[in-house]
Length: 333
Image (cartoon, rainbow, N blue to C red; front, side, top):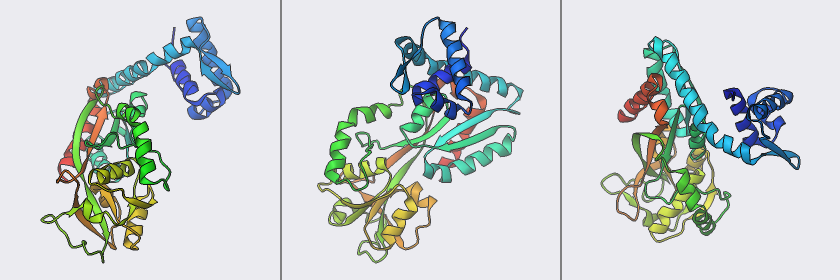
């Protein structure tokens, strides 16, 4: 008989490549991992891992079993949550994975509302950005993933180094387009739209365009000659795409995942930036002017922020309530 704990060990070994690394990830000893793998191999009566240099890799049978592991563990998680919810939500658990700006803006009031109504439901949070957060959801490591994507982007994902030129970033994004598009395919998930997060231009307060408002938004082409400060990798890739559509390549002198650093660099007069609106809500923006920005399409660029879960998990009462709270908080913004 195959046991769920053995499947979790198999998944950890496949992900880490060794028994010792899997033991560290699972919080147990290396001999314990070895024993559970032997028990699993005995259950299926065939080897599941083989040595590869100093590490381990799955055998053909191991790969087949791993393919079914995600669905099995997700189904078990859904069953556990439904059983815990029988007592009228006096117990239960919701594990959230969220990108940083949503963690500081949407998550706190949503969790507070849920706890206020159902204090017995435990809610936990870890931070990860898509596509990693989607992999965690599909892997049974959380019940809800709060994610984003750029509707007008080819994927918006680039792993280029901060000093990479716009040409290098765009070339890398092209090579990764198919993989990025697959990572942002949500067709197998339940999608709960939360909000459209508009992109906002950040300018030094002394900038000639700093006084612009909604009636006269700044066009990206008006910033073509500026030095740019780019944000997270996905946002950086999307910035290059937007500027390319507007007919120019941005000169990116600084790139950082830290939004307060972006604000500080702009405030010091070292460049301009375009950031999602939620990012501005999450940091102090003193010393900069926030202006509406329109791209080549003539309208504001936005990123789509959603809450995602698996179809089985969407029926779990605690998960459904958490989705409702997130939707309510997003609608009130």
